[in-house]
Every structure is written in structure tokens, then in C-alpha cells.
Length: 319
Image: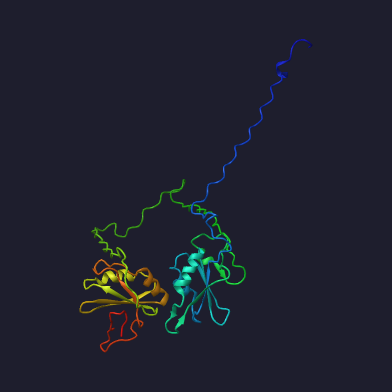
């Protein structure tokens, strides 16, 4: 009908407003613990040392145990392709590699073969190839090292950690019975409870003190511990050294006014690690300041006196 106006159902609605654009998503926060790109060493920075003079029967574990105590150590490998084994060690920064080169130069690695190490800076960095999908705990077992080809360092970001799904148990789930109580074979018998006394902890070194160790012997698997007081407790020494990797046996010799100790380890690398980490440690029961740790002139039990006991001297070696 003309002139009667617009029907309500034919009324024109105003156009809808444009949908606003979603807000910009801020960049994700930096991962804690991830190294900054500016702090990473450059790809042209050589952080690898080249090691020669190793005995022909050397094992990679022996070289790793010797190097793992050095600051900035990351990985090592031995190349057995040539006539003589060649070692490579990668460090975090170039100054770590230079310091390791100075510390290991002319070090007697094997006392029997008189093999001394010769250290040089490598031409390229040792390349560490890690498997895809491995976590940080399994990184040491999954790494593959090589000494040929390109050694340029490439940054590696570990994969994100995804926790495993919780284990599904039939006990306590809706629709199932509650978990039964644990079986106790002595439930029907009056068994008196016996209090368990926890063993008293063995005190460790409370501090370190500088010691004079100018006349040391070539490295071997036996250490001489000097500067011990007459009141030193043998159990305290044993508790300190028996937990060290590679520990085998210990013997304490009490002389007139001096007490000395000899400790044998599995190999030279284990003894060298303790020689470095516990040098100058103060034993509370000794009362003489820091311990003086030296390499013994002879391995443990190599030379004995007439009555079968080891003879010790004050310069750090049995005679």
C-alpha cells in the first residue's frame, strides 16, 4: 500500500560495526637459562685444544676424567685412526682452552710409559652432534663427536620439556574399589618398635688453606697426604676420601710427631682430580691447617719393608 509507511518487518537495520582486529600478541619471554646470542662465543673463536703424547692403550674415559675438572670443559674425544691416538677437548670460551693448554703442557699422563702430554690449539673447534629429541640428562650418552670435517660451532637449543602423562591406576578411579591396605605379616603379633639410630655424619672439610707444594712427584694413582696432626681421626679421613671417584684403599701411618696417609685410586686421572680438588682442605681433627697432597713416588704397595708394612717419609713418597 502506497503512503502507508514501511512495514515493521521491512525496516532497514543500521550496518554492523566492523569487528576490531585482535590485539597483537607480545613476543614470548626469553627462556630462563638460555644463553644470550651476544654472550655466545663467535663461530671463528677456537675453543678446542689438540692433545698428543697419549699412550696407545688410552681410553676415552681416562682423558675425560682428567679434563672434566678444568674450568669451561664441555666435551672430549680421542681419534685412533693414526699410529698414535690424538685427543681433542672443547671448552666454553677461548680463554678456558688457553688456560687448559698451559695446565696440561708436559703433564706425565702414564708413569709406566713415561708419556707426557703435548698440547696445542686446534685449527677448528670440536663439533658436538647431539641426537634430536633427547633431553638434557641423556645428552652425555647420546652425543656423537668427530674430529674430521667442519668444526664450526653451531648454537644448540634444547627441545622443550614435556612431562609424561600421569600413570592411570585402577585404584581410586571412579567405578572401582579403593586400594587395599599394604600387607603386614606381623599385624597379629605384638612386635615392639625398635628406634633406629641414624649414623653420625662424617664432617667434611670446613675450609681451605694455601699450602706449599713445590716439590711434587710425577702423577701416579697413589696420593700422599701430609701436614696432618697427631690428633687426626682416621674415620674422618676415610669418610672424606672414600666418596671420591676411583677410590680403592687407604693407609694411615702414625710416626713420632707426624701422621701421614697414602691413598690408592683406580687410575692416574682419578688421583689427579682429588689432587686438585682437595688440595689445602682443612680436616677439623687435624689441627694443622690445610692438607698437603702430593703424588707418591711409588704406587700403593709397590715397595714394602721387611715386616710387610709400607715405609713413608715426609717428602711425600714411600722408600
